[in-house]
Amino acid sequence: MTTPLHVCRACDGLITDPDDAVAVAHDLGNSGPGWTIWAHRDHADDIELIDPVLLRIMLRIWAAHRPAM
Image (cartoon, rainbow, N blue to C red; front, side, top):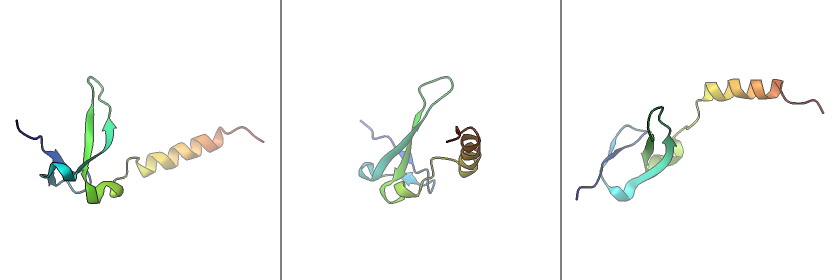
């Protein structure tokens, strides 16, 4: 049986050691089950899972729709 190889999302490098592979997220697919996002153990904390521009836009929308106290 062969071990599947994964690509690190942070550095785009091939993860050849299965013990070094860390699943950091799961992307949903539009027409299927989606896929797992992998990273090297050392790079797992470096991955931004949320686009900072999208987060800034959503925070402005949420703040505008927040009920007054």
